[in-house]
Length: 249
Image (tube, rainbow, N blue to C red):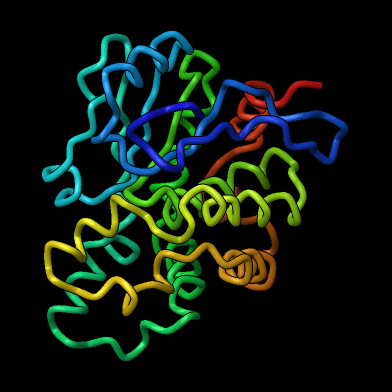
């Protein structure tokens, strides 16, 4: 999206679905932190008719950087914190304590699996909100627009019938738009005096990380349809409403 204050605000439209449809352009967006949106950005999003913001950040993140769309006319905010396990606050705590034992290249993939297992209700609430056509256009976001946002994008796109390959490719686009240098997250480390090279792999959007989550969704939960029903408690009507709102056939 042509915005001045974000790196990773993008349209989820255009992906083909298994039933021959296409995810509608201009209806659903994913993003990084929205606290640095400029006045011109706010005007641009107002012109697009943005109605809903889903914020996956924790309370500490929201308090420090509330996000400018919270006060925008006609925009509703749905707060659905997905814990602190993939936030800069968690990373900061680990660096401060010196407990870096499992912050290796596989940490993000394991974190995504943890989100699926521990917070299905938060994702479910966000999806129920999106399933109403009156809620759209909408954007969901966290701080980096990569991890919590990436898992949400994975769930929504898979529910819409987008292929595994396209879901992974969408996740990996973060690397293109940020160059693995995420400004919003970097601010936290810079304030602590942490060498960004040390934390570099946490900023990466390696396809293997999301593939781990997709594999877990299949092996442990029986795929997206079973996960939606058994773990998220989403009935068939909600999924159908989501598809009706977001898929053009």
